[in-house]
Length: 70
Image (cartoon, rainbow, N blue to C red; front, side):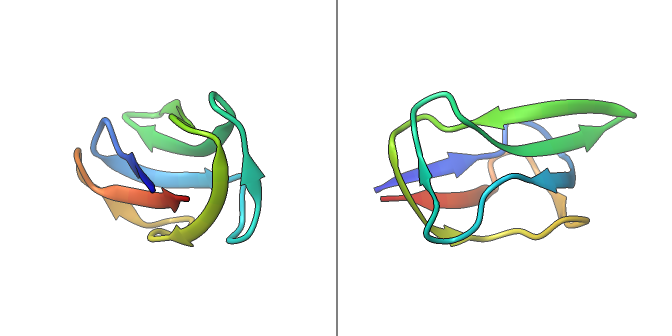
């Protein structure tokens, strides 16, 4: 099981996956927006999205868990 961690504080702008989706390493999963810049968040592992802990529009802090990949 791998946790997808936010590297920055910002807002969840776009989520490209849903629970149950399969992802490969380096797939773009979420886009965060901070200071009018979009920061893509890529999967660190291959597997299935088992949990999304955020939704579009949510504010996140650096270190927050965004999703779980198993």
